[in-house]
Length: 504
Ligand SMILES: Cc1ncc(COP(=O)(O)O)c(C=O)c1O
Image 1 (cartoon, protein in one colour):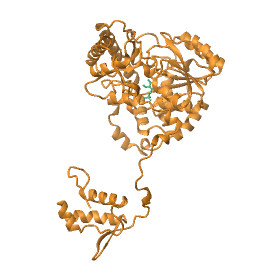
Image 2 (image 1 turned 180 degrees about the vertical axis):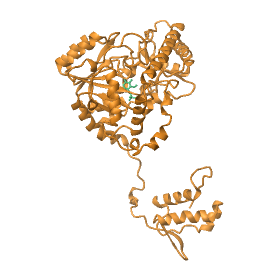
Image 3 (image 1 turned 60 degrees about the vertical axis):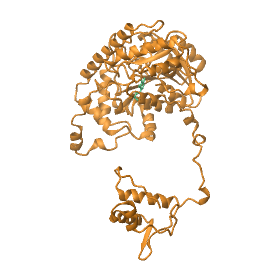
Image 4 (image 1 turned 120 degrees about the vertical axis):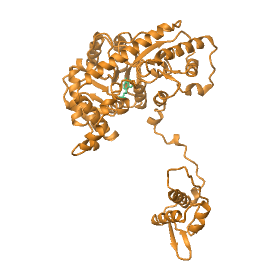
């Protein structure tokens, strides 16, 4: 019997011995009736105290795995449910054969890669879609431990209703009213991030083969959700006034979609907003053709210039719009709290679905957000964000102007998180990805925002996450990488590898 001790481990030595012997018994290496080495002998061979071995043996006995007899020492007992010997040489299963069709349709690692990349050292990340570390209102976390302890019934540590912590639902209702809508708390539900709202909407409305209209380009995680639902995704191009509703009108007749997914304000990734005229027209079309609209609005509050446009939800009089927003972009993404506003009947169904999904959003996070909203200072916080992000946006625009690249086109967004850039014609975009990575800068390639591998001539740059010091340097590295890519011969990718290249 071979026991190996790790003296640097935090696991006590007696437990290391016990766990290894237990493993050997369960794996059949120590068969019933085997005598364990006498305590003194094992202690000597391991260079430890006898009492340590004694404690390990005592625990094994308490677990019913060994017994000790005077004269016979410590003996292994039969394990009741040992796997039969005929399965001894089994191999791990071919898991892919077990996955459901929905799981097979969900195999794009992009989001996870982006989250990982945002934390990589030496790379300036323009790829993240997250808020800035400098403006995160960490002060809103002060005193939470004390307050949590002092809550008479510790309600923030318990389960809360699936629709959300009642006081947060009220606070969000208030926020929505300030944003110009007359919603009631029953028309609001709290989500574990607005991403969940997209997922629940797909679950609530989409059957296999149903058609969903999306903007082109569109938010990749929404595309992944609709793909996973087995929906047919039809894209409508976006121009400087948002979704081209004239094209939409033609497509509606042909495809009879079940749902229209749109980000009318500071769209991700293009940064454009839908004009008021088009918003009205979109609603008219939805009413005429009886199609629900999912309005995703994470960036609406982050306006750096230009007029504020009403949301579709505000303009809608008949309950055709399901509205999503989030605290990820204005508080912390890790807090994972978003919300949905919709007709009460829709909210009721969504609550049924969320119930079987995750029961409810994290209670402590809900309480923290509610506490933040009730303390006041939300509007000053938004103003602070808009000032800081507006400056970063200007800095990115100035940096792009300071390093002009022939054929590189972009426009300064009026709000939100992103610059959407068109690359010079015929630039080998996969090669750029590698060259940019080598130059220490990351972005999201346009292909992520389209279906079917299109979009290679675009890239998305985030300006809120990198610090003001890093933006000019990152832009310099990026423009150098673009120029180098245009000069050099394209990098050759072999078959499958081309598809799988990580987007670092
Ligand atoms: C358009 C859009 N919708 C939804 C989300 C997801 O937000 P949350 O963190 O609330 O899940 C994002 C995040 O990038 C987004 O850009």
